Length: 149
Image (cartoon, rainbow, N blue to C red):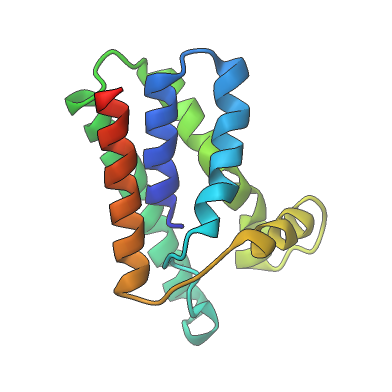
């Protein structure tokens, strides 16, 4: 999934679960479970992209992830503490942050390589447009359910 999708999930987790002892493992687990759903992300076809393009697309995705998350907090979940939300958002993206040194810079040490291999076992990619559509629909469903319940 995109960093944006993981951030939206982290936002909902932060908004609904105020106890970090519960929220942290749920946020990490949500990362792997979300990656099971067929999706597009910046790593889809990354071998066909230049390293610079792949990095710029990924950084743009991260920027959008925080902007969208803060919009969701202000509009839909205003009772959520921003610092706590930021923490849970980062935790929900954490497997990607841990693997970034390996993926972008080929630093082949643990835990970068090990987490990358674990993520690949869960990752189900789907090209555009359907890979984006599945993410958007899943996130809309999660946000709506979070508001309703």
